[in-house]
Length: 495
Image (cartoon, rainbow, N blue to C red):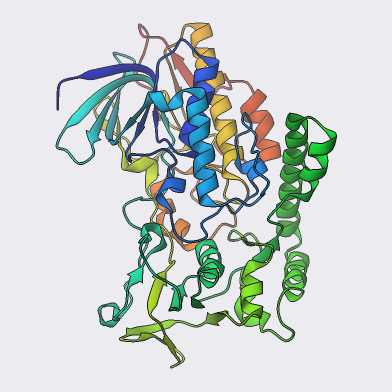
């Protein structure tokens, strides 16, 4: 440790989409307060700077995925990774947030000290043996939910036998030549459905090997309504109208799909049939056993996946891996898929709060034993908030609500002379570790590491933007579940 301690009012962890948004909200609401952003990597963008695989893009429309305070001005509703990365960086530069970021700082430990009413945060300087400490009144974690150093990789038998490259999309080699190559993509999620058409466009012959199918839905790459509204309305009004339309449509689609799953299946199937060759085996390759939105739907802009299938450049293969061979993958059915390159689009590894070791007055915070307050704070942990976006619609809609709530909470503390707010769970609260009807593999593998939900508000939210909005943007701060304290009267909070 170099002995230096930096003091700040609000310490934000992460300079990705959520972290830059959080800094902008705090900076605008409290221009005289000191705010620092710690980022483990050397660039702004988070996920959108890390992921560089071919075709990487948003899987929700940019008019809701973009910031509410800085409307998306691009002409594509489904945008590529580079455009999103530039959008985040431009947002940071315009607001001067880039000057508040400490790059190459990985937070490893944060301890709340009740007597001092502040956080003592320890960060490592990446690539060195140095550590540096920060003192912060409020800690805001915007570090996402998965490990950046490696993705999920099953232990495929015979992997060492394969003579070609085995690539995980999370760490795509920028010099990988795919032109004219036979590529097998293992996976059935959004990454596989994005990579396949992009590799075809680069001249590859692609097979997507999936153990079980996913719902894949064609969606317009451009927002047609926006083009009309921009000619009739001021830019801000056109954006607000399209944003409201898309929020309403996505919410209605999700709710109706959950209520009428058979109707949703039939609707999705009809959209697929119009894009696929006559007689294509939709049952085998695009009809999951689960209901729509038990896992997130995969979007394919303008039906690009189905177009590649129709052109004969991409095959869907629904089977299991038996073993890797020298020349590809042998399937459980005995079929051999020959490949020059194998891509393992097999998912993510969850990482809670960036792997930070949390403590309160010397006692480690064991997150699985805690409850999540409003899906953004942790029982018994003062002055700490985190962003966890929606799983069935735009991540940023929830991130924006959390940021607005944090600003309101900080203002409440300032107005009433408090120095801390601690969520305190009633002992009678029931616990529920599940997210209703959400079953992707990465979530099932790691959800037990997160705080539990309670069985009622405010310890359980509906995960519906239109219902969460009045609670987080306008609901009372002092709702009986927060314990407020001033420096002279702080006592240990019960959990």
